[in-house]
Image (cartoon, rainbow, N blue to C red; front, side, top):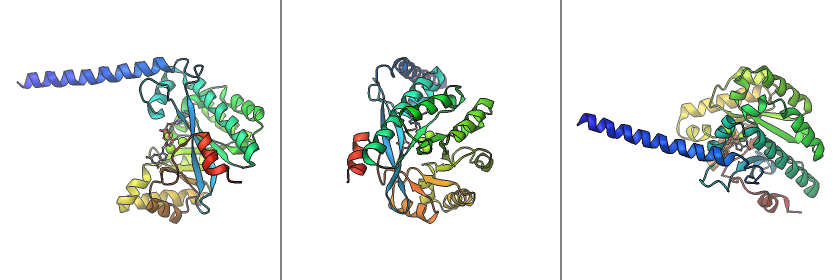
Length: 277
Ligand code: C2E
Ligand code: MG
Ligand code: MG
Ligand code: MG
């Protein structure tokens, strides 16, 4: 009997593995040529100044409406990193985001910043720096308006190229943000040893700070530490008024989250934030 149960569980496990495998395989297959088929879109999530509640920038977030299975970047970006498609996708994201930013600067006379997520694999690519430099020139956008979001994993990847590229991007004048801070290593030395300008507190920190006093103190500690070395802090995943108030107490500089806005199309950004004379 126990043996039979064991075998059923094994079958279930195998079926689940098989299903996951097929799904990944399908996604990997559809990713090939997806840029050429113009399959992707960018959505933009507003980043607001904590004091004035005015928009100061947006983060570009990729969407894939044409995929035959509903799938979000947390699922398909890692697959694209493994298959190598990430470099082409990443270039498409940079081109679209910088061209959109240029249009907003010209048409609305605004000074929004554009944050773009850069994967660890992209950071290792020799072409990244020159691609970014030529896109900024092509669209006449000053480097200071482009924020490149890196993760600690990308820094930790002790690849000499990564370090070299980070230095070059900084010399180009781009702003560098450390994304998802507070989940992985949360290492002080990363903040000191790399030319980081902005720290983004991970969206998982605020909900636990809501309910647990010790977590709240840790989030306070992280914010104080970042404040003390004069880096800019952005809180992501602000969902409630309580969390917004907590961020203000912690002297977070900028806020991003569903409490204010979800990621939306470029047209919706214009409608909601820019078309106001
Ligand atoms: P991320 O860079 O940390 O982006 C923030 C994620 O949190 C986004 O998920 C955003 O939609 C979501 N979010 C925003 N406000 C809230 C909130 O109030 N509550 C909650 N629970 N979530 C919120 P999304 O768009 O699904 O992207 C997931 C991740 O995929 C991103 O995390 C980023 O690491 C990666 N990603 C997205 N677009 C790109 C891209 O163009 N290139 C690369 N390399 N990675 C990307
Ligand atoms: Mg990000
Ligand atoms: Mg993040
Ligand atoms: Mg992330």
